[in-house]
Length: 198
Image (cartoon, rainbow, N blue to C red; front, top):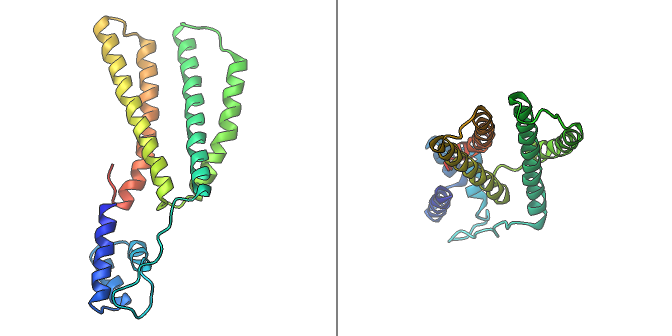
């Protein structure tokens, strides 16, 4: 985000100096900025013959975006919780801790995944990657994923020190860690492409 402020200041200074928009855009792209970042920075100032440049009104976080991306965050959470629950039940059945494969519970979990997974996929597919609201939701997902990793590590270490580390615990810890890493990897890719490293 700090880089965007620097970019906006550079564009403003260049416009004040009388440089044309085409020259500014070409210079930014040549310096390594993405074309859409250059266009966004230039679009922040009205294309009118005025010195100093006139800034356009900045977009704000709309209630519509908050609802849409909030629904995406909720959908992702529901999918992951139910998927992890199914894997936990499978581990308990495999290790003999709980031999009952509760079909009624699995039916609810499968139904939740079938309903909420397409919702998340559709919203995320059509998402504006530069939306401030989406960025907030993505950082929230990263935050909770890192918390899951840390608390999983704490639990494994505590059980290992206390002599209670079993195959079931190890498998469940791997499921939690793997799920958290998938979330981190998915959203980290977006931040790296934007030049914002979490």
